[in-house]
Length: 198
Ligand code: ATP
Image (cartoon, rainbow, N blue to C red; front, side, top):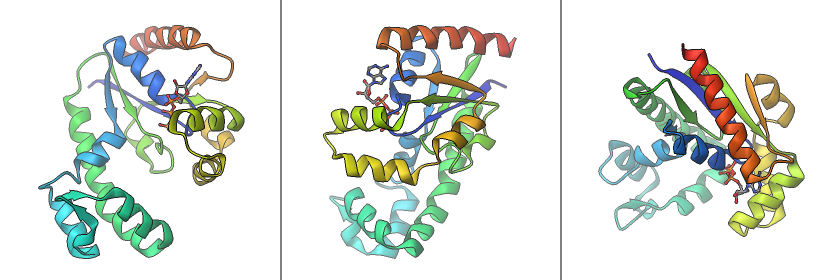
């Protein structure tokens, strides 16, 4: 069995960047966001269930209209629950399948909501990328062109920073690192993870 390391962090903390650096070292990454999109691709049974439940306005050219769906569930807790009950088990099952096939000393399970959605039950150790809220806002706004209020609301909807850090086995403090220093920190952790396996 390949060792599974969960990778998480708040919005704009630097997860995707960290994940890219690991990937450059040949580490296999299983991305929860990607799996979440795969289970509702055209032709997937879950997409048909969503269509039957919400009506065909939820589709655009046969594909899921995410913006439309997000607007519905954002305002309605019951619909959000319905959707989560449908998708979460499918996403988890798909991840378990991909993790079972993973090769290498270890594999990364990248999930923004690793702890919130209990995906850390699938991982052996968890790596948290940490950045202070002010930096999260600056980075996420610059990247997405979104307003501060939007990013603040997303931060507030995620697990709080202290709790996330307490749950971590490994931490990348991405507050005062240049991208080059971040890359070096990833190389250091990679060596550490390979030793864990042996
Ligand atoms: P999200 O949860 O929104 O997907 P994320 O945690 O994956 O965010 P990234 O996309 O990796 O975050 O980083 C956000 C932005 O900040 C990116 O534009 C990235 O290049 C930049 N960034 C991350 N870390 C650093 C750093 N140490 N120095 C400079 N820029 C950084």
